[in-house]
Length: 165
Image (cartoon, rainbow, N blue to C red; front, side):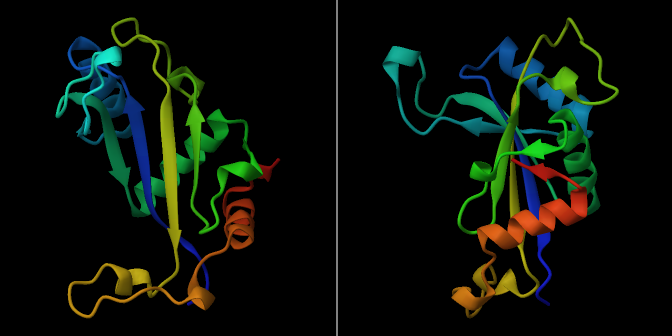
């Protein structure tokens, strides 16, 4: 019950605008992951950037289970199996970015899509973390059961053979 596991992996592409660029980003996520992406909506109006409130400005896909592990293996290969220690937060979650999708193994440049980078956010949990999400009798995770930064680093080192810099 104390072994960490991957709760979810969120792959996000922020375009900053809707239109053709967003459609190309959605096409890329569909090609990489074989799942339909969901659009992310802006919360605030930022006139200097040309962003309106409730305008679609990006897309994301959430992966769980075996799909999440397989995608993470490919993503770590794209990052040369190295991650910075500063990418981990105090609760054991971590995130990193990939500059160009052509870094993934077996993916070639597609002129119809162009060049996009992406953010990958990984949430870790232990069995029993359901008590923070359940509908009846929700409660907080006790501090002794939370995943620390060091435990998350050890889990990723052992599971995916990733070097922590």
